[in-house]
Image (cartoon, rainbow, N blue to C red; front, side, top):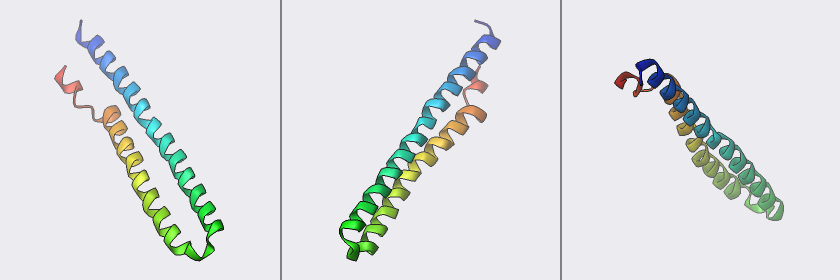
Length: 88
């Protein structure tokens, strides 16, 4: 296999990997929506616990968002700073 074909295969597989990694962003959006939905539902049931529910919701959403940020960084690394290209 010549070098151009190997680089083309590596680039296409990296782009595919970045696309799969970005599906994590969709999962994060769904998860954060569910967290918000459940928080609103809990506040409707117990209005006196607004502070505790809101604090817990924000911590949960922050933890969920870090997964999306890590996935985004990995996708950018696969697309623009792929260390495997230098090995070919």
